[in-house]
Image 1: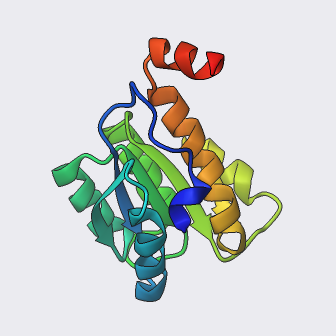
Image 2: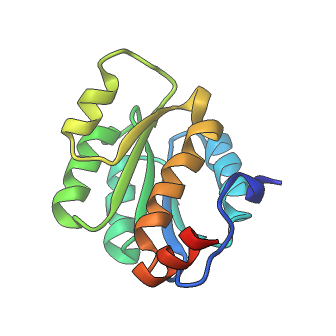
Image 3: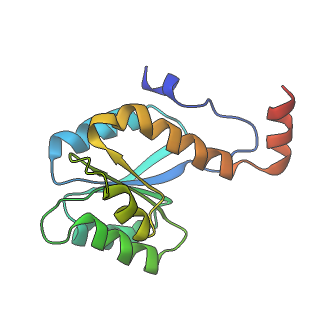
Length: 149
């Protein structure tokens, strides 16, 4: 059922997006893993409960996408995202939070992340971000074929 929220696999798409999930709440990690693992274009390569562990895992598995909570122990998400972006600029980071303060999006974007999603809207907003990422990974000829159909 979650797979219907995402665009189907199209010809010309590269390997699945390698995703690292980061949140200090195990229930949220499990829920996100279940929600996202049904999409054949996503491979969950690791999970972490804090920013320090996330950086260690990212150095090992080189994810293409990191979905990371902002408030975590040891190292919070904005600091971890800034450091990850410096170390692995090809990795896209989406930050999430239970809070939705008006200036939180701009703070996150200044940290060099792809975007920010409040957890309350994660299931509605995350597929939109993933579609943008998938679109950018489709070969130009596949884009042309898709546009003509």
